[in-house]
Image (tube, rainbow, N blue to C red; front, top):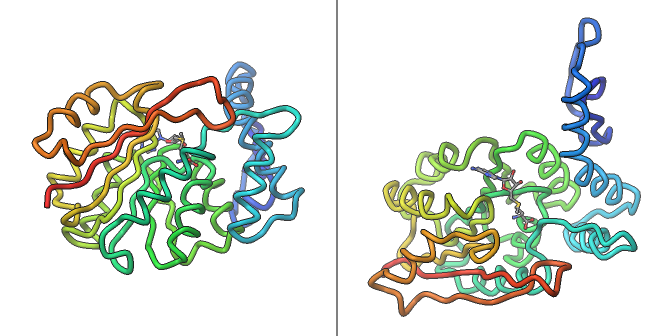
Length: 256
Ligand SMILES: C[S@@+](CC[C@H](N)C(=O)[O-])C[C@H]1O[C@@H](n2cnc3c(N)ncnc32)[C@H](O)[C@@H]1O
């Protein structure tokens, strides 16, 4: 993509990629505008991180937050502030912290997986599933710059396909914590798939974001009607950098 007519990616991201174009592709201007608009924000985030010189998990997390809080108050769809505290609290409550796999659905720029890796003091392996190829490049770059690549893997593909990696590579009962942050209308489907794969460890913890807004109605309904609903919790929590926007995060524990 270094020579792409369609999308300019910051050079540290495409540095390791080799492309040999034969001639300039003819790109429809409407398509170029669409791509520019779609990725404009995250290219700015990466440029901001690079310009800040941030390396290491703490500095990378801080750079993302500074970007979001900056003069332009650029909204970033990451689980920051109150949401990040809930993610980290649930992560700390996972069974067998020294073993098992943490799975994230939706890496975006890699913010939450870097935070989770930092919170687990590098003890836990994190698989973060991401369907958008540009987000995969960016999240991998951010994870490398955060010095977390030893423990964090960004897995490309639709979550319903790539989640099989969990059972294939790590066997059954390996997932100790799953954080779903990709698409509310898919949470219940992914959950059922994880159960079918027997991916969850006993007493594994599960957390879903954005269950009120944009919403995960089927997931919430199933959640509240589960036999083990005493283990279920909803939190009302403001959206990151949007204090007036109420959202929910929802969590429950796997059956013991
Ligand atoms: C809200 S963002 C994730 C934010 C991230 N967890 C954080 O807090 O830093 C949602 C991400 O999920 C990805 N996504 C959406 N549907 C997906 C699917 N079916 N499989 C995998 N990733 C998906 C999107 O491309 C996007 O990058």
